[in-house]
Length: 329
Image 1 (cartoon, helix red, strand yellow):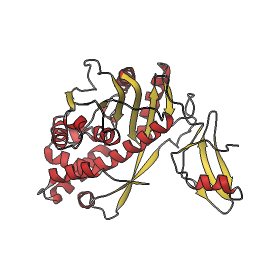
Image 2 (cartoon, helix red, strand yellow):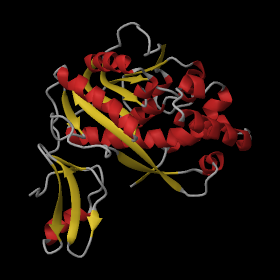
Image 3 (cartoon, helix red, strand yellow):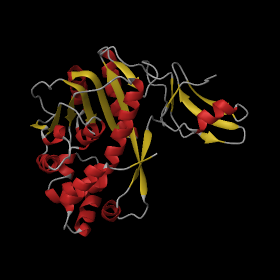
Image 4 (cartoon, one colour):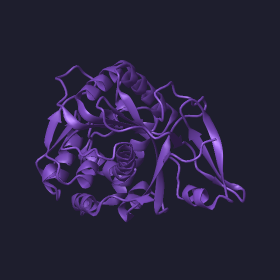
């Protein structure tokens, strides 16, 4: 499946860049990407309104695709979950809030929390022209998660997407505990699908387990992660690039793959993890379809034989990142 920004968000984004030359934005996008790769946080990498425009054109589609994929997995783990309130931590330009509102148009309240002025100003402009009341009436809160602050407002769903990279390790423990405590239903944490992003998620995962939370996805178990370095757990969202996206990024391909890593956790009684998770691209051959599975106590590759037509037909529809409840031995 190839993701794209929903038409309402794409339209709102295009309206804000109307008349803006894309050449300078492309230069800023490259500088921002270089700063992030060097370990800079958003406050240092994205400093002006032009920077935010460049970021929105090149990164907003990718982060939206990753968030949307993870929300799919959250609902597969807890199909009955239907939030009325959302807390979006480190919201940036508001990507997570838009993803939630697009999925649940009748939300009662969305709170967007961020420390960064240029992002908040841009998010405010996008919210003002949103088609959903939950977005036009969303509450913006200025708070630096890296610093001690007031307690987080409770919400049915707490989203922390691409936030932990902005924090020191000691702050990750604190924010994860606060975020899980504020989540009446689900906490969703998403990080870049890099070894560093995975390591930050492992800190978050152990913190959650220590406080009694259940990991609903992607993990099929609550034990220590079974993946051994130099490998790491990550998935990928394929997204379409708009013309302005391609121009600003300086690329020609009509799509890109956004690698991400994530956790879905709860302190509530609802939901249950899948019995296994596909943690690599399925491999197809004449013999069958090979699936690399993370299971309760082991990681192994199982092959669904082509001669089993029913199971093989099901396996052909599976992709990297899907939960799996078929034959495993």
